Length: 479
Image 1: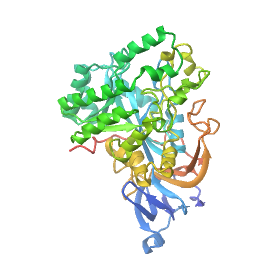
Image 2: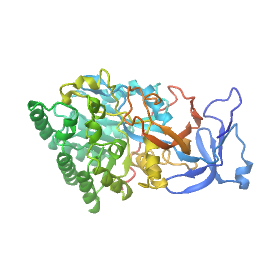
Image 3: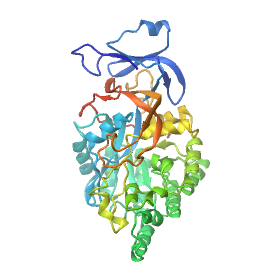
């Protein structure tokens, strides 16, 4: 790929950029086309060699011959600086969004957290303060509700009006994030009335805590036991219960980080009834397994997350769910903790291992590998990683596609480049890779965020503060 630079003194993201010669891939179609960018937006597309395309001029011309031109990824589930288990996720908004840009993701939706006893507004303000002026790419927020009460229910309406249109509840983590069925029902009812989408961490946390206590009493302390106590059936049961509560409330439901065949079946059954139930999975469930959790010498701690990694046989059901649209989105649940000093907090007690994996940098590449491996099509790759998360969370068509008027979030992607994933070369602020040594074909080459080149032929040219907060409309899959 060759580029013609902008003249000195040009303002990044405000001039004209022409991406020439690539195969433009969206969720809807694949078209050999040139893309004209002006003032941070996609101005026009035209077929290669057409009179319209030949007439275009620009301060910067990017030759994308032999490359794909795809929309910037939308990662709808990240946790930068999340407090958990007495520590904090190791990526902040500066390092995490820079890593996102390296991986072709140009929008993240992170989770602001309500503290127990506090207001939603306090949590949201705290997350705005963490992110403002620090992000390399655009960002939005969901709201974690840790304390559902009359006051926080009323606040939901106000937040929807501000573009915070989704609210996450937990059936897990008693004493921390957990909501009981009555609280969940009330939040779903309020969301149904205001247009807010309820996102659910579906695991039976009350039962899991019993199994954790019993396992530790038996001396079962290694990381692999984290997966064994967080049983498939307790994910499936909670998923079923969340669906039934959403039916009672007349509310839509989005189930996060689905990891098991039985949970997919619950979502599929709901969707077969025509219910507004949606499901997300993550790369770790598609590419990793309990084999990783069982790695010796406490190395399995690197792979502790919740829902946990499952036996490898569950992967086929997840891929089927993605192909058949019973699962609609692949997000990362990026929540990294360093092995040294953070994951090690759980030596001798798996329940004290901070839950979370790094992944924001690798989602687009891992899913491209899935295209090559025959799991999904190229257009489905863009659909589950860009277009559908944008629609699901009220960002489309500003984000998630390449069309006139859309933000010029563009990725020039080399489908033939080979790479080996490693902590030595990734850009996330974490001391290990969950995919260490994995060889992939396909790599992000150049990235534009709102028309500004933030990754230029594998050279980072972005900066903190370029990324803007993006208020969202309500879920675009609902009437």
